[in-house]
Length: 273
Length: 297
Image (cartoon, rainbow over all chains, first blue to last red; front, side):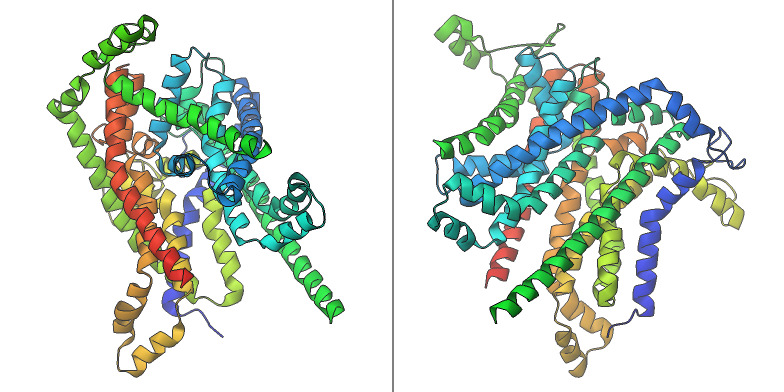
């Protein structure tokens, strides 16, 4: 049985204090009554009130959510297709180029992706707005989805698909009835990843958005460039709470699913004996 | 037919929205700046057929690239980006290694929780994580108030709007990328090797240097590249935490494009940044491949 040594406990504590203290301070100061964000003047929730009256922020939040839902759904579909092609597609013309285009966006600086997409949209005379942000987000997040899904596809037992084909399924039916249910957790986590990437993105959205569509990160950036603001602290607190609740509940659900699967497998083994 | 559609749809998508934009950037980097909308003179005119294509090749020039070498702002920005990225990668390693080591040494039932605590910040907005340091590092911020209260300093330290704040921002936001690969290398480490080293007369610290560090080398390399590569082209951190003297190429590109509206120069800056990035990316991929081969054996 391993126990924490003095050294390890200290380094873990310091590491996690460093990771979490800034966010804790942010959350605490969002309840500060003073406009001066560094002076504590008593507990108040007034910044949440002014935040919910600020229509520009609410509009931007709505645009951001719409963009994130649509782009992550497109990305989940396209990314799964791309992963399937990479893992199961065999050889085809331009396969190297294809896999290069899947991995390149993962390491590309956002300023370059944003600049190049903007130049494309201007070059073909596409009006910038929500549509262009959706296209841009779909493009980079489909690559993340395809990496997540293909790692699941690589590890799965091909004989299951072959059995379905032997039993008379068409290739498409085998995919729908056997492959898809098995890779579904990976597709869902890919979707979640694409969703959060889209919610967070400032740089690519700034390049590809037009005057008609402003996302929340663009709004936050232009507000905080001038300094700390209590309204942004309140907004950050809301976003941090949503993420925390989401991640913790997702991990609890997947833990429960894993336990259930293990129990089912053991039950199946007992029946087989 | 179905297979063709399956391949063609994502392929076509990436061609149009990833590859073609790059070709356009490359092309514009070779064009001339103009005071118009769009602010560059296209050098390829397909409507005039062969004449236009010949004109295109004749008009291609490296003028913008020459401009980048003559104005020392640009090469200073590249050098300072490399320097900031390298220093902050090293600092992230120094902060991240003990945490990863502590995680790998912790009792088994603690590991999933510690793992989630490392990953959780990664799901939180990048912008908000950078922003959270603005209130801490400013002259009347939390850190200075604390240090003044303890009496360690008598005047507030100027940290925000300097390169120090940029280092802190990069360490903070990219720490999970450093911890995770090192943790996964250390987790696989066979504890009996350390016992053997100690039995053979090594002290704990010598055993750590001679056994643990070399066996976690792949994780260290992977973590360093995962921090260095994105830090090099970073925009948000130098723009919010850095000062007017902080030169990073992502910020220069942004300003060249949005403030100076010099698209050809912005494109040339992007092309050179890509060329610089190719080296660490290739090295990183080679390291990953080595690791896969080692695991396959």
